[in-house]
Image 1 (spheres, one colour):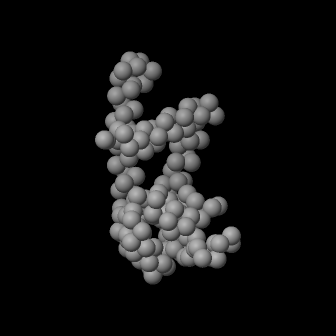
Image 2 (tube, rainbow, N blue to C red):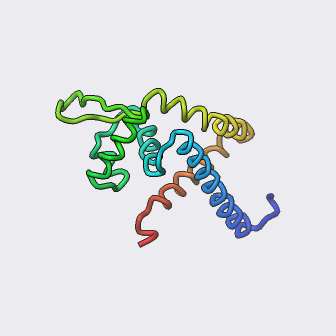
Image 3 (tube, helix red, strand yellow):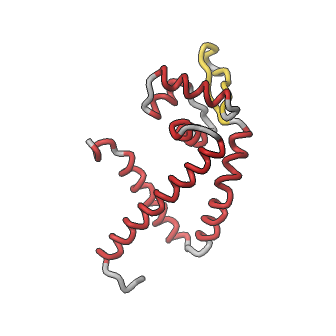
Length: 153
């Protein structure tokens, strides 16, 4: 591996990143099938999983997913009906509700993603702290690049 040129390594990293993204999509598809949800609903659950300490309002979820108020309302209704999301009163404003994944949804995610997480932990054991830091910096930059809306405009 060290014998590759920088350009060859760069190309290989990009190919591996696309392969990883495709595999992650497949993992998400398996979770969506197990949870019996639409891919957009899966994106909502992924967002809620990242917001555990500060559950979003319906409007905040809609903004994050770039959905209209009608679309996000329907999405939340489906997820609540399926038992994946619960509405909580907003402690600072009784007129608003906040959204949180249910324990049932977390358990289902653990069933689908648990083995993947274990395999990642095993893989990371072979890296030094400096190497993991480099991986983290790269993944943050790759995520920012993917989130950059101007890249496709």
